[in-house]
Amino acid sequence: MIMSMGMAKRKPISESELQGFKYFKKITRLLARLHEHGTLRDRAGNRILHYDQYVALQLLFFFNPVITSMRGLVQASTLKKVQAQLGVSPTSLGSFSEAGRVFDANMLQPVVAELGRQLQCLPHDKRLDQLPGLLTAVDGTELSALAKLAGRMIEGRDIKLHTHFDILKGVPMEMDLTTAKACEIENLTSRLLPNHVYIKDRGYACFRLFQAIIDIGSWFTCRIKDNSVYEVIEDYPLSVSARAAGILSDQLVWLGSDRKRGGLRVPVRLIKIACKPHRKRAGHGGHGGPEQGEYLLIATNLLKLEAEVVGLVFRQRWNVELFFRFFKHILGCRHLLSHRANGIEIQVYLAIIACMLIALWTGRKPTLRTMEMIRFYFTGWASEEELMVHIAKLQKIEA
Image (cartoon, rainbow, N blue to C red; front, side):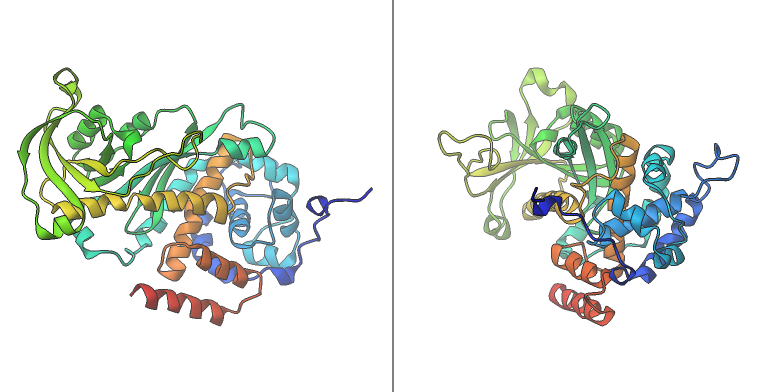
């Protein structure tokens, strides 16, 4: 019987394929507070794998392409180099699997917050500095396909990640795991904060949500349906720069018909922006995204900004879509290290931490090329000097 390439037995991980541990020192100090968590039941003192060690091993999964599975992490824990640098002991598949249930994912939130405070804003269009609050793109992505790839549903359900993405720092600041059927509007409403500028696509176009954002002391920029009903109160004149940016109209309006205005108690600004039409070819299914006409309708309560700046704000929403692709395809989160909801939440938080570490190391948001170079370094294929040259080139390009 001939074994296919996909079924070939993977060779054992060697110590020569693992380096770059000094870059973990910043995070291991923050993780020390987690060491005793989950040990209350261990009255005999037999626990070998502690929370901080579990996290450190998972971070190896993100940064070293040689390690591609739970079994790979377990094998890495037997290497003396890993044990010395990360302070771990040889662990078993059973202990690693159990950790996804024993350790509380929410304990990682303070670590994410601490790293977030250390991050600096990335190079950006200086017009975004005019905004009255923290520029935050919100969206959700389903991970159901990942569970199906694993041949089972995670605890019997599809799942979705509701993400709050800090545009100027280039990293997610919060991700909430729910069932796939959970309402995105309700999830965002329950997590609203003051002094934020929320960027949202059509799925979040809800009068009640708009009013909740206004009531809490924040702002929104949201695309609404092209056929939305509204009553014009005032037409604002368009500047030369607004017309050059593709702004077709800028108006103060009452959104919705008379009988539907109860959810939104104030008028809002409605900006129409020209765009390239997208039509589906006859006979084709849902691939390629929804149809798009010749313009976008953007509703906002940012009343004092120039129309072209509002358009610039909405264009930043695409950054969260790029992050989802990075999260699933580049960081390796298409492969789940746990099939428990809490274990997946831990992996999600660690993906956020990995993105923040890359931003702290490089001063730039994570990209495929940078991730490749970091992984070359962590496997010993690139020297630290070559990694620094790559980072310097990035800084020069974006300066």
